[in-house]
Image (cartoon, rainbow, N blue to C red):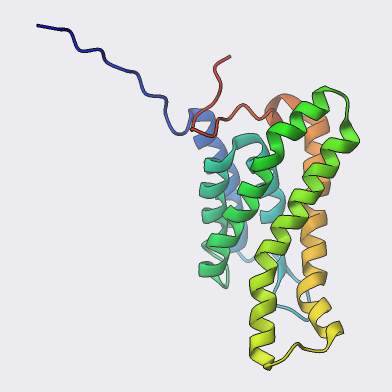
Length: 192
């Protein structure tokens, strides 16, 4: 009889990636569940560390880590159905540019790399803020007075953009070995 060849499957997540989900996703979950946030008036947006943690873990861990961590971070929020979708979308958007940005950093094209990361974060915030803006418009029946719209949607989004970009840029400079995007789109990480 013929011998069957047994293929060794690559895991969807490595031990390093599971550790990232547990550490970063768990910390984001606990931080929000304990209510350690600052309310951004006049909105229901809150300022916590979840956006910062998500940006870091998405860049270093990849899309599957971003989805799992983002889901964990969204669970204890005031709007879990919204946040459990919004946080993974932010993470996937950041992960989608991380490999290109990393290559540019290795080529000493830092301005180009950081600009790409900033554009991705702005795009992610726009993607998750657009439904909220549509909700505000639907509640009022027409587009609300623009200062109100800016204070309820654009203002907090700018704060979240800065809260994601600045710490991510700092961690990329201070911990390059941890931040190196070793992850693969098919799951797992590159072998060294």
